[in-house]
Image 1 (tube, helix red, strand yellow):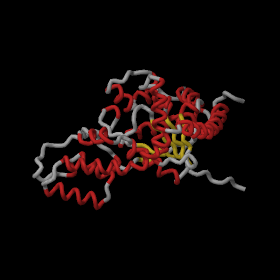
Image 2 (cartoon, rainbow, N blue to C red; image 1 turned 180 degrees about the horizontal axis):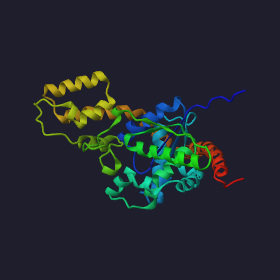
Image 3 (cartoon, rainbow, N blue to C red; image 1 turned 90 degrees about the vertical axis):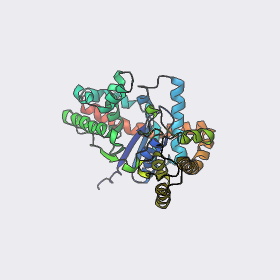
Image 4 (cartoon, rainbow, N blue to C red; image 1 turned 90 degrees about the horizontal axis):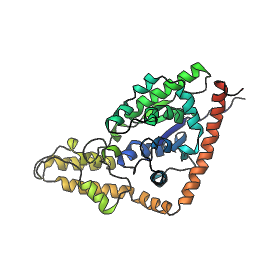
Length: 328
């Protein structure tokens, strides 16, 4: 008898380095939740990776809990997806060391993200430099087939494939070469200043902001100085771009028509956007509040998932250790 074909294994992670925002939601979380029914999903909270930029233990614990609450409130089902803390699977750091021994310095020196982070003022620590090696270990220790990524992460996945190939050629054919699943182009989310929404730019709208804090940040979105009465170009407006993420095609067309007709100020458009954000996340906001009152239940979910993930990681490491001569 032939063994049943394993469902494709999908893996992604999110760093707990700040409050998750609309860019995280439309660029990653929404796709992660949708993929739960398409394959065997492994999603982890990348607390090892956060060590490169967050160096406060209490803050890290709080941020990890925040990410867990956000994912669970937004619809991640721990019965369908394996959802865990990265550090609860310590074998990943052993694999990262082994990968480091088959990875050329030149490969890491070409990493765009490292250069970008240094340009933004982050300290050039070794962890930041070797981030792609740990990322490769994150992906490959579960022998993942598919990795949802944005365009800015494609190079890291190519590096992961390179590292997997180097190990396979040097020692043993342990690892599949994972494929990228690109986030839809329409998921690009502008921040309040018009740049890509990012915690590092300080231009985010938090997913679970509400009340006056949400109103304040939405009303601060940068617009041009076109007078109220004049026609406006919706394709060049940050408010319209954000509204389009929540609206139906008919609603987008109606608002675009009002822009082009003139007579509507950006303030009114911001109020429409505020109402959309508030209504869209209202059910998840209530679920999050209920979950936040039961932190022990959230911890139980993370630990149970971590046990499943670690069992898979340990199987992979047995193959790795034998393959490279660390076991008979």
